[in-house]
Each structure stands twice: as C-alpha cells, then as structure tokens.
Amino acid sequence: MKSMSRIWMPRISAPSSSSRIAWMGLALLMFLLPLPALAALGGDVESVHQDQAQMKGTLKTTEGTTFTVHEIKASAGTVVKEYASPAGKVFAITWHGQFIPNMQQLLGSYYQQFADAATTQREAHAGHRALNIQQPNLVVQNGGHMRSYFGKAYLPAMLPQGVTKDEIQ
Amino acid sequence: MRRKTVRSLLILLVVGALGFLAACGSNGTPVGVTPPPTPGQNIQPISVNGGPLGNYDNGAFVSVEICLPGTTTCQTINDVLVDTGSVGLRLLASQVTLNLPVLNDGNGDNLNNCIQFADNSFLWGNVAQADIKMAGEVASATSVQLIANPSGYLIPPGCTGTNEDTQQTLAANGILGVGPEPFDCGLACDPVANGGGTIPPVYYLCSANTGCVAAFVPCGNVCQDTQAANAQITNPVFNFTGDNNGVILQLPSVASAAATVNGNLIFGIGTQTNNTLGSAAVLQLNSSDEFTTSFSGQLLNMSFIDSGSNGLFFPNGIETGFAGDTIPVCTDNTSFYCPATLTPFSATNESGSTNSAVNFSVDNSDNLSTQNPGDFAFVNLGGPLGSGACNATSNPTACSFDFGLPFFYGRSVFTAIDGAVAPTGVPAGPFFAY
Image (spheres, rainbow over the protein chains, first blue to last red):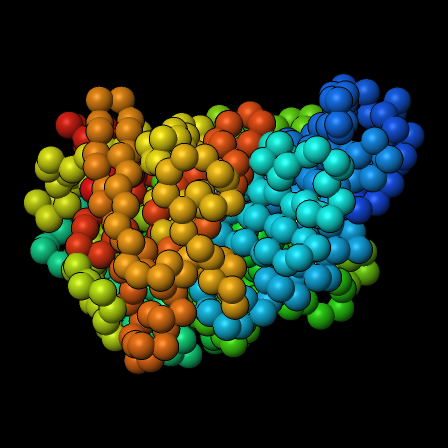
C-alpha cells in the first residue's frame, strides 16, 4: 500500500526544475559512459582498449608476463579489475567497493548461469549469506555487507597457461 | 532568482514538517522532560525460529510496530529479520496495510531505493515515512523501504539480481537493519557531500512516464550537508529520542542445534543499567565498518559481525593453498562447508589494544540439515569466503571473516552507530563489542 502524500524531497533531484532535463541527461550519461569500458567475462578485451583513451584517469592497465590487468573505477567508486589473456580474452574479474557492480554487465554470457546457481542455492537453503559458486567452467565468489562488497569471478578453463587461480587477485 | 526563492521557502516548509526529528535527534536536547525509561522499555524480544515460512536457518526475527507519522494509526509486522549488516527498516509492501506517505520530488516522481546483497538478491521499492515503535522506543517520521515490484515501469539496470519482493523469496516479512551506521547510503548519496561525483545505484526517482533516474538524496547535518534534512533510509535506533547510540543483540548459547532460541534486542549502549558495556571487547571500525581478524596465519582486515549472514564465512584453505586449515565445501551447495566431522578452529579479533580470541567449530552442513529437520538454530554452520592470500589492495575477496548469526549464540553483541552521541564513558561509534 502506498499513498501519494506530498512530502517534498529537497535536493533529491535537480538544483532547480529549469535544469531538470539537463541534469537527467547528465545522470544518464554517467550511467552509459562506463559501460563500454567493461568487457564481460569470457569476452574480447578489445572494447577496453578502444575506450581507454576516453576513459583516461579512470582506467589503469598493468602488463604482466602472462596476463594484462585492466583496472576500472565503476559504479560510484567500486574498483573492477579485468584480467585478459595474451589472446585478448577476459578470463577473470575482481571487484571491491561500497556498491556491488552490475553483475549482468560483468559476467556477460555467464550471468544467467551464475544467477541460476545462486537461485538454486537460495531455494535449497533460505537466508542471506556470502556466495560461492563453483562449477567446472565458472567460479564466482561474492561477500561483504552494506557499504562494503567484494568478489571475484573466473573461468577455470580459460586461465592462460602457467597461471594459477591464486594469481587472480 | 525568483525560482530559487520559492525553493528555499519549500525547504523551510520541509524542515518545519520534519522538525520533530531535528529537535529531538541524537545531538539535540530533548524538548520537555523525558521520564527515565523503566526496565523493559528498551528491550524487544527476538527469536531464531525459522521465520514466517519455517525454513530460515540462523535468522533472528523481531516484531516491529509502524504507524502513520504523528498518529496512533498503527500496525505490527511480525517476522522481521534483525540485521547488523545493513541499515534501515525494509518491509514487504504486501504486508503493510497502512497508507504510508511515499517521498516524492514534488513533480510526481516517487523516490525508490535499491539495495543489493552478496548472494545476488536485491530489494527494490518506494521510500516512505513511518513512526517506528519497538519496546518503549519511538523513531518518528523515519524513512523506510516498502519492498515491491513496480507497475508501470521497469526496475533500472543498476539494480540487478533476484528480486526478493515476496515472502516466498525473502523468507521474512522484512529486514530491520541496525548496523553501525545511521543511514543506508550516507555520504556517497548526498548531493553536497558527493557533489560532482557519480550518483550511486541506490536511490531513483521514478514515474510511469519517464521511468527511473538515479538521484542523490540528502542525509543532512550528520553528513555535513547543511542544505537539507536527512531523507535517506535511516537506522530506526538512530532516530529514537533516547537509547539511540546502538543496540545489543543477545542470544543464549546453543549446544549444536535447536528448534527455537529466544533472545533480546536491547536499545542503547551505556544509557541504562541493562545495557552497560562492562568488560566487553571493543572492536573499533574503519571507514568501511570493518576490523581485523587474525586467522590461519592471515590478517583479515575487512572483517565484520553480521547477524544477517546465516553462518560463519571465512577464507577456505583448500581454495587458497596457504598453510593452515582446510575444509571441503558441500558438493550440493558450495556456499557451505561440509567437513567429514565437527572441526574446531580459533581466530583472534584485533583492534587497538583489544585482542580477543574466538573459538568456533564447523560441522557438515548437509548432515546438520538432514539430522535436525525441525531445527533452525545451528551454531556450527559455516562456509567459504574468498580464496588466495589476503591483500587489501590486490585481493580483498580473501580478507574478511564474516561473523554471522552463529557468533551471537551465547553472547551479547554490541553494535554502536557512527555519528550517534555516546554517553560519558562509552566510546564513540562505530564499533562492535562482545
């Protein structure tokens, strides 16, 4: 049940109604901008490179001998790291920050498998908790509490030769 | 200029409407003479009993009375989960019969809130105001979430996962967040404190015509925002007129498993004779409300105490390969441990001069469930949290010990709120203590 009682909310929207449209446009832009910078798990890292120029200052790349780490600040300060193989495929992703990043975007084609596994676990055992999905082709770990969340996802079969899962940090 | 003047006037009106909060808030002097609370006034019973569906392991449930602000038109909601890992009261809209006033921007857009949990579930719904009553305490005109699936527009893509908008999916009628913060989002969502920053995926203004747009919502003076009063979803305890600096969650010990465990949610820390800190070990918290746990040769510096986690969750040796304890995870549910037999462990919580040893055990989750079909309290339920060596910068996933509800059995656990005014002799929040 809800009513439409008018409790005026100061300052939750535009500074003034005249700039409301522009403000909404800005908000939308903020949401759209980080999206193309993130390559989804299992996807091609090319999109990260393409966006690197325009994302200056928010994207840091560290070249390793066996993989490359792309660090991206997304979703209000949450740090996302994408691990790319020499072949240019994203084989692991980690995240840490006040807000859980958009998992649909991060996990891409693996999202549904992850979501289904999480649902199956919850239906078998009610309640909230840290999450650990361990399947032959997909591992996802997620934990934390309101204001601090962290996690990692990786594809065991796609780890570059010589890379162990403990190196995904 | 003319428009600005009108707006200022509106803000003044709002300040007037919310004036009760400002006048009687944590850092104000109560208006009039408040009689000292009588014993029991600050004690609300809680129960680990499986919840409304009789299927929730290690969940502490409480009854909460909500009222139309400033009236005696009230309703009691049973089976609300007590959660020291979140902040604010969130109720299934389907359980609320009161016509609570929903916050809006004056242009027909309703304020909505999204919170996401680590297990890929989320809660979405209107932000409304209610007077919240527990024991003899009252939080007036406090922002709460009414959990519901919207009609007429879609939940925005920043709010993803499984929608727990029914009793069937939530396995509770709501969540009472009494964590160590006054507000669910705080500075990051405040338009002044986070001026120029990205709007977090937490608050949205929504209408059938335009859908939802992420929005800043002020959290007022406590957030150094002097331009607007707090409207964020608020820890009800913070809005009490007294006993408002935190809570004690108190449960008796459990040998292994039990059908029902009854305990208390006590309001205030050091404000009454029944909520003194005494010799409790105090764990001061960092800016992420975390402390350090020494476990298995690792310093887990992102640890926390969370009654809303239904087990003890900590890095797994088998996954990590670091020297120390190793436990197999269950094959059917990899979020829980399944050792062959009951396995004892020890950890030490550290903060300042505090060094507090915690002994605990983990049993086989599958066996616990099959051997105790009618039970809902399990002291030895645990699961994995991260892998690899903890490194706060490069591998934060393996840096936490999540002390869930099993930790509360046989303890009085204090949760002190950041920014609340503490009585003389009581440390300022945020801290956990036990």
